[in-house]
Image (cartoon, rainbow, N blue to C red; front, side, top):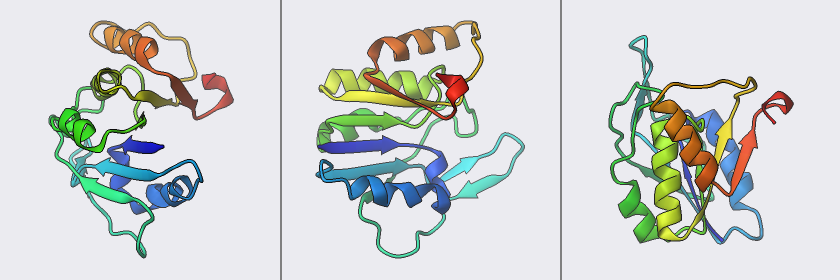
Amino acid sequence: MRVLIVSKILVVAAYRRKLDEIAARREVERLLVVTPPAWQEPRGRTVGLEPSGGAPAYDLRVEPIWFNGSYHLFLWPRLGRLMREFRPDLVHIDEEPYNLATAHGTWLAERSGARSLFFTWQNLLRRYPPPFSWFERSVFGHSAYAIAGSTEAL
């Protein structure tokens, strides 16, 4: 299986430790990880791509994002092209379901014939205003899987 993981938080090396475990799975033929060159925190701090310790068992691709620093409205402008080139079987968008990047990623995954999944810490039933409720509805409708960060999020 060809797996694509897209995540802004993977600029932090500690968060990439799990990727070697995923890449080592027997069913994973190839793992491609996409992260931006940096993430702009809303309070002005920039978190640059930290170097990994050693040679990773996956391919790391640094791609630009639009609207860097906007947690819910940032976007990966080259994601469609990247999916066409890589041809993933599974696309993991490591973002909440009410984010534009997640809605865009799940839509592109479906369009390319891949299954998709998202991650959530959301543990309260909330009704979001548009456009966030539209993003969430689209993600729920187009995702094959979800990963919850807590039992309350189930």
